[in-house]
Length: 461
Image (cartoon, rainbow, N blue to C red):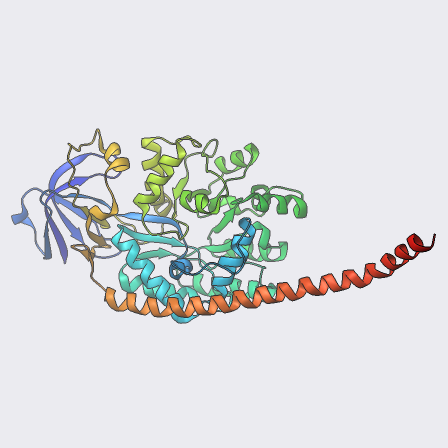
């Protein structure tokens, strides 16, 4: 069976060519689309959408997401105000991810999948962390995405920061998932992954013909740590393990890299993913594509699920810091499809489409489309979304799951998370306070004999 989109204005996502046509959309992971002039010749159609006055084009994809951050919106501030990027991780994200359990992960995944769908994305590349609920976490996310109708490429964030036993569990979760699913080998960042874990992860990448998905030089701390501990820079370290030899490897952020690292990336098969709004929020710096080549994706880094918004942020902020223009902004927005196709991942075929109800006050055509892309088209113009030939958003409403029930469930889980997170933060602050007091007492007793001796000589000399 198939879907008929009649009276459509189809925009070829590669050439931006406009075409007035009717479109037959096949169902299935390998489904095709067919342009038909006479709709009387169409057979096996079970659904019809009148697209008169609307634009139809390929749906979108997220190059880097964090499902685990979905329930953080509105959460109270940590007990200690972070003073740098490392403390943002320590007091916010590394506290929050430790609180996640099965229900919280499921709620996070369902709400993220719905948000992506309503923003026009039918494929998501996610980077997950839940140190106290590792085993089976990727399956929970995958099932939630499947329910909504979103294709996915998942990984678990392997790291030594919670101990080598947790790192080993992350490796096991990754291997168990890769045995029967398309996915990547996820690592947090160089500064939380020692050589032993890096070797195991690289071996896993080779064994399953996969690639790394890792944060790279998001903050200067990552580079300083690498130089202090390994006497090399982050990209050089990863390159030594063969990580950049895989076209499946995704390097997140890449803000604080030098010319040599840029050259290594450009001459490699790997892809870089830019996350402008997250970088602004964390005050870590500005992305610049100079010398990196063309393999640049866009992501949201868990800030939201709206790729159109990410593209606009990359363009506008990049005017002062980057080599970005209209064509390159659109190219980065769409490069994720090349990444998926090159690596033969399933779920991003031509039968993944968005229908835009774009009420432009001016003419839109092939020649000026990029101006509309930057200054006009927003996610609120997305009327319908088709994923693998199935309608998952119709008239701006999610179709495969009960959105109201899921949002109610997610609110319950967010309250649980916030309470648990606040308690964990309080315990952490108390331990730090006690540690500080003990150090002060130790320091006093260590110094006090010398202070008394000094006072004696002053009084009696």
